[in-house]
Image 1 (tube, rainbow, N blue to C red):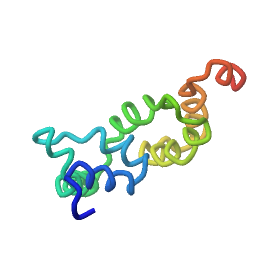
Image 2 (image 1 turned 60 degrees about the vertical axis):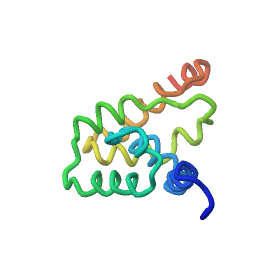
Image 3 (image 1 turned 180 degrees about the horizontal axis):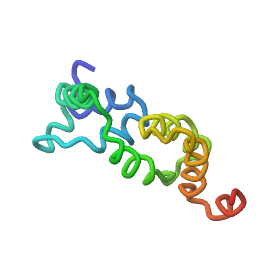
Length: 120
């Protein structure tokens, strides 16, 4: 990777973090300028800042991250259903409603109408 440019380094770094980190966090970060999105040191700073906040903004996490979660085009149902919904739900402090809200979000978020209707 030594001879690669910043964009390649950033892409590999984000890929190593996984799709959940990219889809639920990185895409929401605000950088001072667009070029910072392709700099690993700036990306690390953004993640450090996010995790050092101390408190989770429950309204943002539940309203924006959890309730707007839908299956991405070309993504298979199995990957959509997995842990990201559970992980995000834990941050939302849904408590006894957690299981039913996860179920509802998965069903509503599935793109294939036939599959969604069968689940409903």
